[in-house]
Image (cartoon, rainbow, N blue to C red):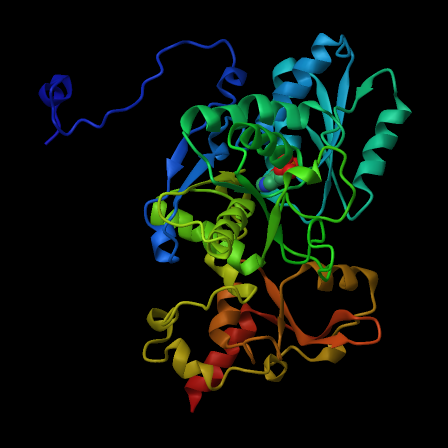
Length: 450
Ligand SMILES: Cc1ncc(COP(=O)(O)O)c(C=O)c1O
């Protein structure tokens, strides 16, 4: 029972001990850094590893990611160098989190900023930046060049802090993120994290290696990236913020002892597992890093009594409409739709009983190929960006159950056939038809008639 008498009792044995910080700060920027380092209590055991895994929760930074640190560091450095003037505007190329960190600083300073990012990155990141007043350009390739052109057009006004070359990027991780880990841990046997610019892994890795000379530094490499996996096959992947192929100035490759390849599915399932099992609400690159840590712990026999630190770079806020949503995972065949989703709606017919019928959706009414011109540029764009289902996908013919789950989060799904062209060594998808919610309804209606 809760009443005022209980509230004022100070010796209540059930009182949760909160770490209260009662200082008053002049700016939210004062809360950047000093993030918690938390032990994983279930996941290592569940995956059969005996070392202790501690996660550095960088998503607890006020604007949501580890990039808050470099945002503040690069800004402070620019301020000390006298680069920031009355009419200064910022431009930055980013996968989103550095953009959020710059927009956050620019909002506080009352300055304009333009963020240039790859279109693969989430709309949640874009919306967060726009909310803080940033102008966001989403491009497919050539982001750095566009950002530099914006700077070069107005060299006296526009400042590009440039996380890809700015020494404050790795430096702040050496001075703060790495130093915080060192102050909390007597010994670290292995540290694992992703790399985008390479600033995080270079700065933290150097600090840890100086302190614990035997510490292994491992990168979580998304499958399809050839940043470390030089003999891997390059292909697109969905995890954001990490991987790539370029020569990176702030990445010190001599710090990285090893990489582990991690698929999109492994990364997102691990991020979801961190939420379910440990209550840790982190993003896909963090899932990638934890999955890589488990693989590397097995590979290098990092067993009982050893300590592993994994850096979790951002949180689920950035991915609410992506891997956090069940249907998004199902649409990419990373998870199966739940059983009996449609029970309430259609009574006795469960997804499983529909599975036998559901099928080539071309047979559904109103979805004949002739109604569409797939060569039209707008259609081409749509076919590239919209949800697709392959009749011959890795799990075989799609079911109506799966289709209806995807239609929860989109208005239509393009159905087609996927394959691989050996001559060009590339994957293709041939669209064949379009299905909408009313096609599914019609299908169920027809099925129920007989
Ligand atoms: C979610 C996420 N993870 C990892 C990284 C990689 O960090 P770094 O650029 O320091 O290598 C980034 C970089 O933007 C990121 O946004």
